[in-house]
Length: 347
Picture 1 (spheres, rainbow, N blue to C red):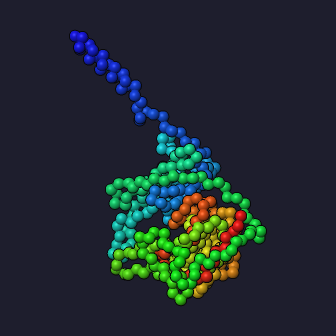
Picture 2: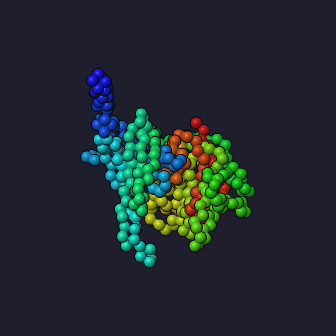
Picture 3: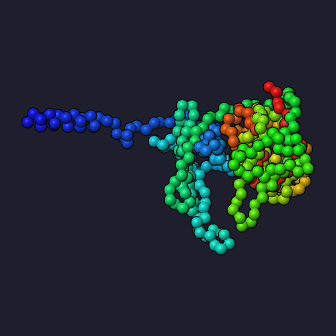
């Protein structure tokens, strides 16, 4: 009897201990205020990519714009707070699941991907969740974010002091330049004093991946002058400090758009069309100073000391205050450059 009584006491004690353990499902969720999440954030994405998120409290609703790795800054489909998962940011994409013989969509699915965002100290972190197109599951990517301070007032460019000009391209070889990803193919070469990129693709053959070309040197604020020649229907880009893309594209005759020649890609539309027809040499005069950009294309002012709120698609850096390289897109189309001269701004 004593043994049975002792065993019952042990069981009873164990029951009390187990029943007193907290139930994870019953724990109160961590509360995150929307006020902690509003503002502009640069995102460091798993795998080394960069993004940007702008969360705004509008009258009666939340709104947001998102840049995820590549492409443009775009409005989201929806953004809302939850009790237990923080801020939810959704975007949608139409995916063709059935096509005719000409490749036209017969049926499409509207695929929703989403970010789950919560605060961690002064930063944010979370997951980007994207359903696989074949319906077999969801891919998850982690990210962290740093809040951006407000852009300062536009600088007085007439009072800016410059240092000694630096010739980025010697006209002979690729000294001072290297691929960002050395594992990719290099489409850049030097021919008759011209820096050329020709990412050749053979019809019917697998796609060949070409790398982007960057300077060994890194810079803060500066003025960059160069000449560029864009063949018909070709497309490339010049990245300032590895973060902000100035668009290089054959857009002659097209309506004004933030994806045209000389635009700050998807962020700032040129004031006017100043590009030349494809195949002509064109001059660019670009100044980046105090998170503001000015672009003079073929002698005409097309971006006038405008604020830059965050990185553009394809950025390799998220810190808007860090030094970074000049980099030239190598994975898009044919393009030629010459007379690349960078003059640092002294502070």
